[in-house]
Image (cartoon, rainbow, N blue to C red; front, side, top):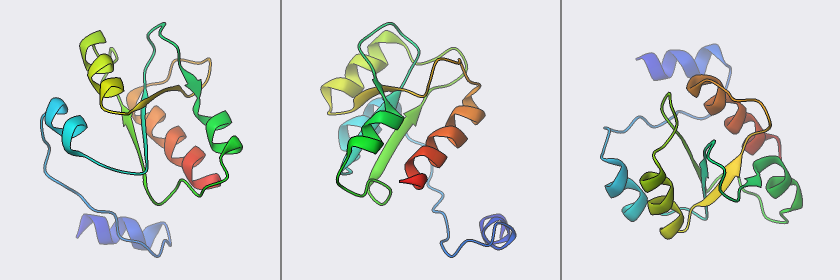
Length: 113
């Protein structure tokens, strides 16, 4: 009911899928999509999500997954695990965002292309 109400309120033609939560390690090892990203704040090499999208010749919106960390960010072990499982480390910009804001920014960047 809530998902349908949200879809109608935003006047969108697609119904979001809500799935039961799973452990991080299981998700990054088993989840497959064409484009896998992990947004984090650590000082590892990261790419600008916006630049990656702008440079891409492929449409990324249908098969993209971006991991947004909890308050306090992902642990270094989680970041390494994601990268080992083909997730590209990205930044959403120079401003440190709250979790819920980061998810919205990432969704907008992926949908604008």
